[in-house]
Structure formats: C-alpha cells, structure tokens
Length: 91
Image (cartoon, rainbow, N blue to C red; front, side, top):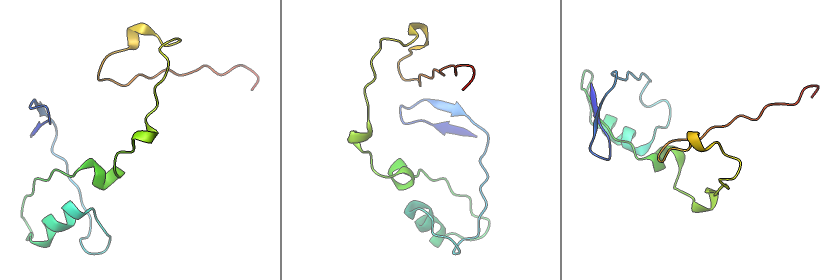
C-alpha cells in the first residue's frame, strides 16, 4: 500500500488494520461520518485531521529552546532532536 504525504511524496507502508465495534464508543467525527453510510466489506480510505485527534494547535504551547548546549551534528531541519541527560550516580 502506498501513502501520499501532504508534500506530494509517495511512501510505501504496510496496510493498517483497525478493528472496533461501531456504535459502542464515540469516534472522531470523520470516522463516524465515513462508517455511517458504509456496509460490511466496504474498503475506506480516510484522512483524519490532526485537530480531531490531538485538538486544535495552540501556539502558546510552542517553546523555543536555546541552541547552546545542543549537539550540532544532531540538528537536522524537519527532524526531532532528542538528547537524554545522564543521571548522576547515587540518585
């Protein structure tokens, strides 16, 4: 199965399988709307907006961090930066 990303690139990915009982739990609106008219055996392809899953973007939650102290070779635009601090012995 191939997936088209928002920037237009196409990426191979395994088919996702998701199972649940419709009507017993509240689902995100896009999913509810898609299933309301579907029949058993129908194949659906959906794009669920991030805001339906995670909530609206809140700019007040974005924090700028100083570059000083970061490992420069790990800094790559568009990628996550992760650095674990070592715990001191005896703590």
